[in-house]
Length: 76
View 1 (cartoon, rainbow, N blue to C red):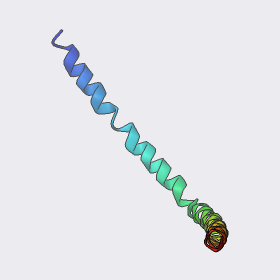
View 2: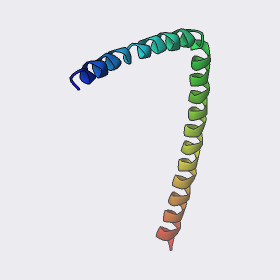
View 3: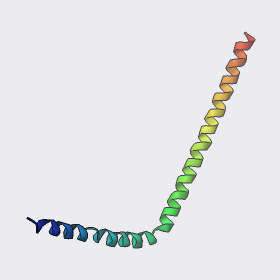
View 4: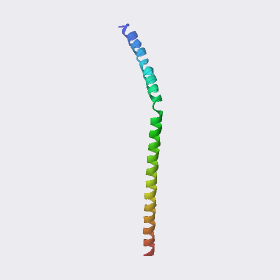
């Protein structure tokens, strides 16, 4: 039984070595995709800008409607 713990420690030492290799391969694949990610970010920003614009229009219409309703209440 005293021999089993050293074997477990050796296995644990071997396991951390593969992840750095995996990280290296991931980094090399990410180097070829910066343009895709930049374009994707720009598209998302444009979509968000459109959503913000639409929300501002909705707020403007609701504000106008609330003002009109307030004026009707005050006049009556």
